[in-house]
Image (tube, rainbow, N blue to C red; front, top):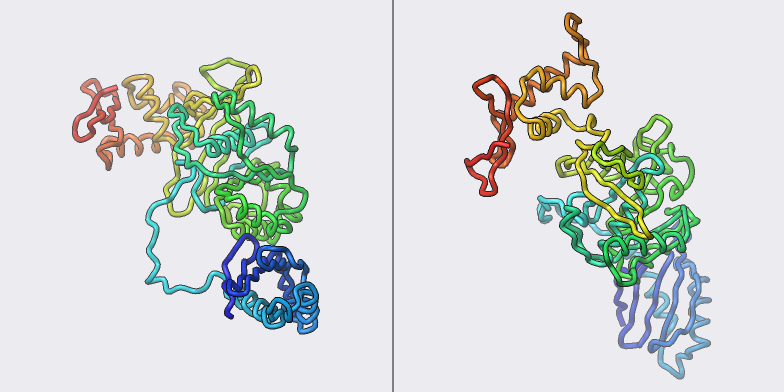
Length: 439
């Protein structure tokens, strides 16, 4: 009468099919010399008893077995509860101690490409983090992503490829009524008439203290993406403490699903928390509020996303978004970082490309000056010596131009020097290859 065990939520399901006995084990606490768990027993699919026995205590197991025997007597039903309880205790302790088990690396097939839940923003199965000042639009943007994923909604105007899935929204900051209103407004902006299937949970406990219950919800609801809003309130203690941050990310890892974590910046304008926040997250984006240089709509919130860190993939291009609120609708539009006041945060090669594409052929000196203006670097007046900052900029622009004259890929933009000495940029045609079209 060997039991069958499988992982489920925060614990395990253990069954004795021939006996009609099933045990649901949850909230395992293995501290010191005590191994406790919540155990719910059913017999022929009817509940019998639920308790929190100490599974490595002879006395505790004996008491648990006696309670089961009183309710379903062996003499009448033929179930040896003492044997079942001993088997339950042994298989749960052994399985829990083994963890995920060990493997020989030579047998593991490496995953050469990142799998995206949201291409190219959220990496599947990893801890993804978006941080920025308050009022940037982070929470609404993440909720908008949740709505798209939940509904399997496709809109090519947004330039995102989102895998449909079930979303759990863990909220330490607002309440169900406010978040529900936001989702309805997002649906209205997208033209979605279906009810939302996003699973919402108001949180009070730190994530590390509540991870067992969250694991159970993830398992019961078939959750694919967990949104944490926000990390500052979800940690247990000071955000600058290494142990606090590590405990939080251990909980995220234990929950075991794609996580999208919202966080804030500290007084220095950098990611809140110790260096362990940046080290523990596998994919990090900075959200920066910025004004549009092409739109004066006061209802818009313009923000940009800059990719700061990723493991096993290249840094991704920056993204620009504008969010507007009109007649109980939330509308998001994809834009260009170059057209916002954050243009100076773009890389020099990106600025060179955008300037030549938008402004037409330029001399090298003119190109230097236009890049400097975008980056808010002082341009020396005639007769003045160059500052070290401007001299470094000129050198970096020169390197960018040189590399773009001989791009490594046929699909990359190419800079050409025209007969009059000005620089022009070309991009591949739709067919690619050696054919190029001047812009």
